[in-house]
Structures are given as structure tokens and as C-alpha cells.
Image (cartoon, rainbow, N blue to C red; front, side, top):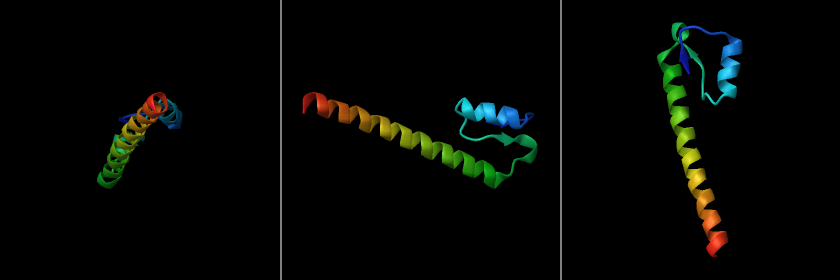
Length: 64
């Protein structure tokens, strides 16, 4: 989540709601943004792979 305003409470709420990261625009550093984006893409890719493997495991149990 990238925001121009916010507080620690907003950050906590955003993370609880599923935000991968919380960055303030006025404190944003290029390397921090790069790390946050890389981590979010990595996690999304891993989540998709895990979901596919879960489906495949279910199929094997059903038809195996």
C-alpha cells in the first residue's frame, strides 16, 4: 500500500486487510519500493503455485 497520509494504526489495519507492505510517499526510497514490489510479486507467484498444487493434490486424491 502506498499512501500520502496515514499512521501506525492505518498501517496495521492495511496489513490485517491483506496489504503486502505499507509505504509512505514522503518517506519512500527507490530501493524500499523495489524490495516491496519484488516481495509482493514473489508472494503472489508462490501463492498461485501453492493453490495449483493444492488443486492437483485434490484431483489425485479424488481420481487416484
